[in-house]
Amino acid sequence: MNDVPEQLFIGGVWRDALDGGTFAVEDPATGAVIGRVADAGPKDARLAEDAAVEAQEEWARTAPRARSEILRRAYELVLSRSDELALLMTSEMGKPLAEARGEVAYAAEFFRWFSEEAVRIDGGFGILPDGRNRMLLMRRPVGPCLLVTPWNFPLAMGARKIGPAIAAGCTMVLKPAPQTPLSSLALAGILREAGLPDGVLNVVTTSRAGEVVEPLLRGGRIRKLSFTGSTQVGRLLLAQCADTVVRTSMELGGNAPFLVFDDADVDAAVEGAMTAKMRNMGEACTAANRFFVHRSVAEEFGRRLAERMGALVVGPGTAQGVDVGPLIDAGGRAKVADLVADAVGRGARVLVGGAAPDGPGHFYPPTVLAEVDPGSRLMETEIFGPVAAILVFDGEDEAVRRANDTPWGLVGYVFTEGLDRALRVSERLEVGMVGVNTGLVSNPAAPFGGVKQSGLGREGGRVGIDEFLEYKYLAVPVR
Ligand code: NAP
Figure 1: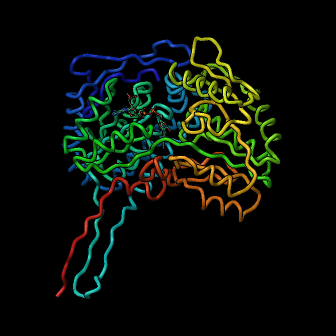
Figure 2: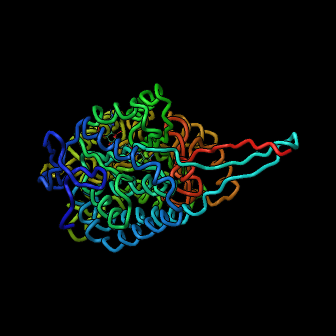
Figure 3: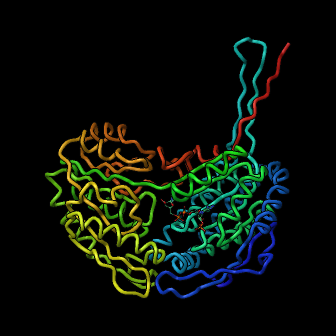
């Protein structure tokens, strides 16, 4: 976008950080600086919190239809700027333009979905068992929220939180990831244009996340934290929320198993693997991390997956025909390279890829590893890169047991032509979501989220708005 703001957005006003500080945003394909955004400190964050607190009461009184229409306009504006937003996202995050356009549509859809939910917030009425007391149930906005988002889906992770918060009548302070702040700032501009009142959404970009976030969580005025990011940071923030009993939604890391049974359609499994592994260059919480393939189809699956992965074009996300962009930064690429080296050192066979090219840019080639040792480090950590690790299993019980042998539980993928097996295995997998013969589960109309250390709560779907609402019960005796 030509005129992406690079300042903080507080109380409806674009302004510099109080100390005038800025930090650079880089293009991961080239390392070039593409912008400098305001670097907020704790005092700036306090001002953003003040604005959100001040706007809360009036915003909660706004007619649901008015909130709905703001979201609807935002949906249309986001879509009408699809090309510009996609280019912006590709420039700061690296994903190919076609994928970035897909994310723009996905992000917009959260605004449409929650514009429809805003006018469907219901309550309840009941006669209590004693026959005398009546119960009225109201649903009220939680209050000012802090939203903290990661860099991997710069537009969608913000929209998935902002949409339901607006629908519910909550005000917000959004702290985006420092690698990708421009998409969030562009979104704030669009929401303002869509008619969002001043102070409802405030955006604080910072290179000092800890210093900015902790005082807000401990200050007693923020009533809810909605966080998407790593389990490690999620744990830390949960602890910070404990003292002031801040309500939380935590969308954390994953370690998705991808199960291919002997009765699977191998074409569908390879196609599903391409999506589940390669969406966002593998930098997705939903990325298939561990491929468990039945011994009878393992060789064919591995060979065909390697052919498909090897045919992908790696390059800058803005270039024509590119399928795989760079990873987010040097650290991200080094982590992937280390995990591959560890697996190879333990005997994994490289079917394709496996060696990072020289710079510039943080590129890593699509890689398939077969005969991966279960003790390899990539089995117990998110690879967050274009690397498929294949292990062989013999029986259904074994596959389920190994799939569940992890502290994470976001998503699993099951490929089988048997409906009974699909249902049985889906029930047994310890995850919040299952892709049955598909490598894609994300949909704004479905509840997204995990179990175990993958998080608390759900985003999207009918229940997504619940995360931003409280019940209030009125006891009314009737004589
Ligand atoms: P991250 O390091 O946990 O950071 C996420 C956000 O938290 C960033 O804005 C980050 O800012 C901030 N943060 C980090 N330390 C903080 C602290 N001490 N106090 C307050 N805020 C802090 O995760 P990431 O590398 O950006 O994203 C990748 C992770 O997100 C993966 O684990 C992935 O699985 C997960 N993810 C989960 C979902 C889901 O829906 N379950 C979706 C997408 C991504 P700084 O970078 O400045 O520290």
